[in-house]
Structures are given as C-alpha cells and as structure tokens.
Length: 349
Image 1 (cartoon, rainbow, N blue to C red):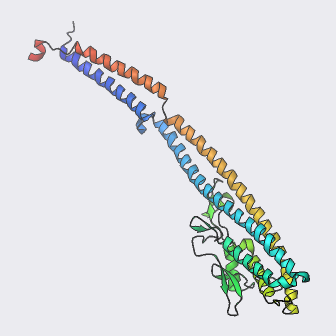
Image 2: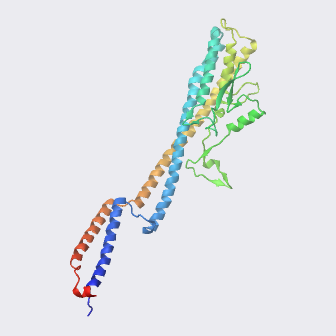
Image 3: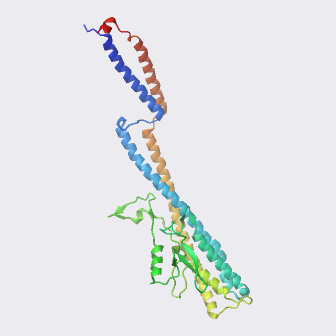
C-alpha cells in the first residue's frame, strides 16, 4: 500500500499549477501581440521562413521607393521636354524664325529676334528644372551647380554652357570630349529587374540608368557648317541675326546674315524633330518605370500577406485558447483549496 502524503500532493499540484499558469501566460501573450511566436525557439521553421520573406519584402520596398522616386523624376522630365518642344520650340521659336524670313514681316525682325532670345532663355530655365534638391537634367552630377548657364562673351554675344563647358565646342577639342562624356553618364538604379554582376561589373541590362544629361536632349557641338547643334544656341544665333536688322525697314545687316538665318531656321526645324524623338523615347522609359512601380507594389503586397500568414495569429482561435487556458487555471486554483490544509504529521516532518 502506497501512502500519499500531503507534501507529495502539494508538490504535484504546484507543478501542475505552474504548467497551467504558463499556458495562460502564453495564450495571453498571443492575444496581446497577435503573433504566433515571440522567440525563434518557439517555431524555428516558421521563423526561418518569415525571415526570408521579410528580407525579400525589405528589398522589394527599397526597389519600390527608388522606382517611385525615379518615375516621378522622369515624369517631370517628360513634362519639361514637352514644354520645350511644344510651347517654346514649335509655338514660339519656329514661328518667329519663319516669320522673320518672310520679307512681308521685315519691319518686325528685331521684335521677332527678341522672342527667339527669350525662348532660348526659357529653354535654359526649363532645362534647369529641379526635382527636390537635384537638377533633373544634371546628369550624374544632379546635386551640383546649375547645369545650364547663358554666358556673355567679350563681344557682347551670348553662349550656352553645360556644367561649365561651352556646348558649341568643335569636335576634337577637350571641351567636346568632356561634353561627350557627360552626355553618356550613367547612374544605375535597381528597379527590380534582377540586378546582377559579372566579374565585379554591373550588367547594365539588369538595372535602370537614372541619369538624364541635358545636352543629350537639346544637343551639343557644331556641325560641318560650324553651326551649333544645340537648340537654344541656334535660337540665340537667330536672335542675334534678327537683332542686327534695321529697326525701321528690317533690312538684313548683310547678305551673309540672310543666308545664315535661312540655314539656321532649317536646322532649328531639324533640332525640333530630334527633341521630339528624344521626348518619345523618354516617355517610353517613363511607361516602363510606371509598369515596374505597379509590379513592385503588387509584389510587396503579396510578400506582406505571406508574412502575416506565418506570423499573425488567428485572433478568434487565440481568444478561444486563452479563454480555455484561463478556465483551466481557475479550475486548478479551486482544486487547490481542497488540498492546501496540511496534517499534523506533515508539520512535524
């Protein structure tokens, strides 16, 4: 016959009560935190999977933030080029240049020249537009000084510079080499296209070039006739030619000026066609960024749902478990009332 002492019963009861109390605390923690686990040891498999998902979620969010910022920048660039092409080049400069060539408008050549000059200055201002604290068309040095500036030469004529270099530089000069390098600058951004490297070199097709060099849009250098390829420079030269015409009769200052005006007007039309092509290409890049932004947003939402599916507890089930654990704990306390009184022999021991 085995004699069960009160102390033995109390030890067993205390052990069971502690387990019940721990179960209540664990159930309460799940309800309060709404998490399936609070430490890695509670569910190593789920915690490992959640860690991988959270790493992917963090990367997707970083890519989404970069893509959203870049998309806004390219959208602003599209709007700027549209203003340059439609409002200034087509709407003012081209019309003024063609009107100035018409002898019927000879008396208005000087005012038309002023329109051309102001259009050139407006283009410079638009091409110096900023997105946040950076210049949209500043290339890789978007946080530097104002990229485009109209400088005044010793003879009083104006010429355009890009980041301190005259844009009408002849091919073969150091200035032209600098301009060419700046027009090809890159600043790659991860937009979720599978950023990869080979032998330490970035695969350009796996990233997106976020650098927008202003001279690659409105031109640089001079052609075989010595005329500028830059749209604003062409307008400024036409402005100077029209400005030299007679204020009353509008007569050309020289036959050379008349010939130059006709030739530059044709080249102005060509430069407008070129910037139209550039604007179309930029619009295509903006559409790609919009698609990437939507895709990354959907990816981020899907990853977040998967993470919640692993980490987040079913609240209804958690509350039910907590209620049951609380019931068991209260029942254990009531059972304890009947075994807490000790016998005289237990006190003597």
